[in-house]
Structures are given as C-alpha cells and as structure tokens.
Image (cartoon, rainbow, N blue to C red; front, side, top):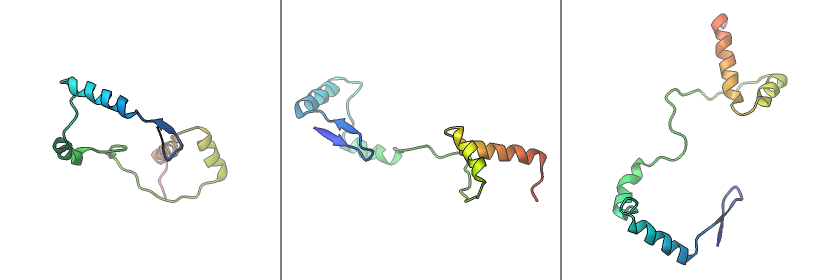
Amino acid sequence: MFLKTKSGRRIELPTPVEDAAITAAAMSDPDAIPLTDAEWEAVKPFVRRGRPPATVTKERITIRLSREVVDQFRASGDGWQTRVDMALKDWLKTHLPT
C-alpha cells in the first residue's frame, strides 16, 4: 500500500504482517519500548515541529528593489535574502541613513 504526500511523493506503508513484526521487535527491546497512550499525552505539549524559534527575529517588510539587484542576489543561491540583509548592515557601518 502506498501513501501519497502533498508534494506528490509516494511512501510505501508496511503490510499488516510487517507492521506486527516491527511492533513485536520494538516491544522486545527494553531500550526502545514505544510510549503508552498516557505517556504520549503527557509529552505531546512539549513536542515542537518545524524550525525552532529564532533568538533574534527579523521584521517582515515589503521593499522594492531594482530587478538587477534582485537577480544578482537570487543567482547566488539559497539564503539570498540573508545576504541582502548582510549587505545592508555592512552599508550602515559607513553611512548614516537619512
């Protein structure tokens, strides 16, 4: 049996026999016993998904930049917006905003 994700990836799910074998193996290992429903409910509030909160947050804004500037930074690959931020910080070291 396959499960299709939102992105279109197909994930093969174990058969009921395979699932039973996996569960039996996990239950026989004292270091890997699955959580009970009660234990899971106790830890669920502490489980966080996704990126951890940043210690220093940035402000979301809308800014208009020339096409050539955006193209150059985007061409440099992932993290281009962070590099724009660093370039502006570097500019502020020698200039006073008016």
